[in-house]
Image (cartoon, rainbow over all chains, first blue to last red; front, side, top):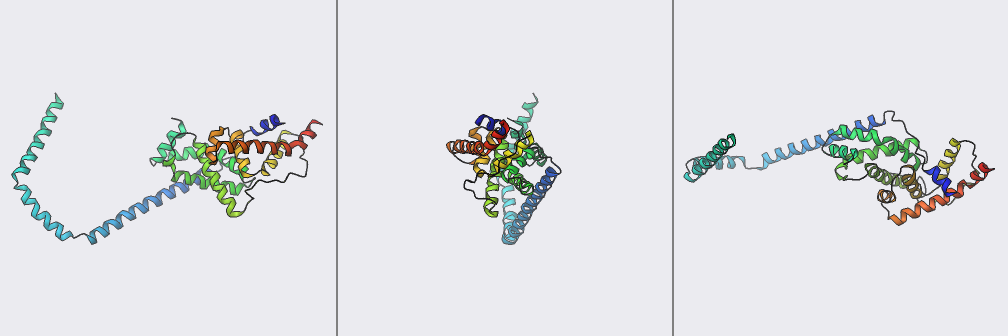
Length: 97
Length: 178
């Protein structure tokens, strides 16, 4: 009897026609995707607005305004920048060979 | 890497079209599985299948390797159990009632109807185990993973389910032989 039962059980399940099922699922998937992107964008925007409100922008601007001339007149900084530029130029020359 | 694994990886990278291919490939078998689990309730089976695919899409990055269909069935089975508890569709304990009417057996399609009727009287875990291991061709290990039960428990569900089916279909066999 178990052999007969096994023969019955191994029969494949009744095939179910798609009839728009996959299309409906994908419509819901795309909707979920859009909602996810919207939530991410809204989160990023909120964070940016909060950051603009909270950060002491004027103080940061003043700091940068003070730092730029100091860096520009620094011998060590200029030497380092020159070494980096020369290294890049040499690397480019060697890569052409 | 199997085609399903490759498509799942593409879907995890955000390619919804790749997931669409997976849906089309597996929808019939998954809906068939859920149709048997819900004892022929087409509307509920389709609702559960939709929710299963949506959950699969949300968790697609959690799918590693192996049988994608088995992974889908695991989600579907867990959704089915939640729904069954919520709706009190059926007792999740074993169904002990045997059919009191002898099944009629004249053609192959009637045999199938009888099988489905008998299946509907099994406990959900036995129904799922038999369907996964026989009709859907999963190995015992894959079916145990899918149902999240130990291998020994799965084998016990298969054996007890098969014995119950044999007892329920015995009147049909006697009638068919005579």
